[in-house]
Picture 1: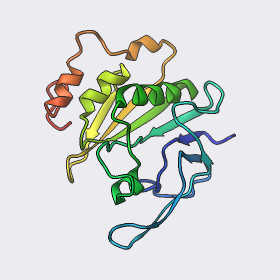
Picture 2 (picture 1 turned 90 degrees about the vertical axis):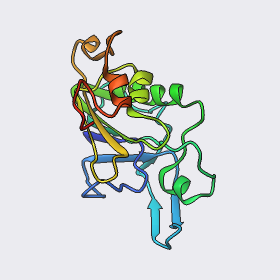
Picture 3 (picture 1 turned 90 degrees about the horizontal axis):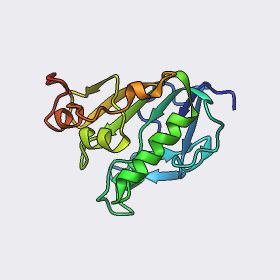
Picture 4 (picture 1 turned 45 degrees about the vertical axis):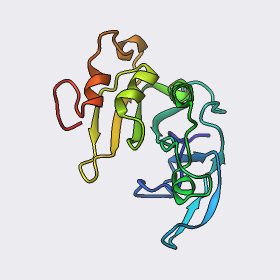
Length: 184
């Protein structure tokens, strides 16, 4: 694959401005075509079906990765939430960590990884603690306050972004902000 961007959990490509961007490899673990609860047609049609915890790519294959894993645990298997977003296992910590670690493995040095998280049942602070890496920065959407975007960069000395033992970041995220900044 010569595409520089990976979306390993593309779902319906809802946040992409160009849903057929030729520079992006759109992947997911499923295909779906049907109607949602409001009768809108919805489609999950990845370029490649894969498991984001075991990516079939060489190390350092992509310059940019958008990681938007499922974030809902308690949804019925046939619910519109499950159809639209997928479900995360109840034992989510090793699942999310394995997915993040795989994305990190295939990310090129000096590449960027954007982690999108919908805070419905698990907070961004819990996610950061589970993956063990501190983001460079992040932003909580103001519309509904449930979606957080976290930015990471892979530097040659990876330990620069390991979560410090006494980091205030997870607790601060749990309290609605980080490092004293209330917007996140």
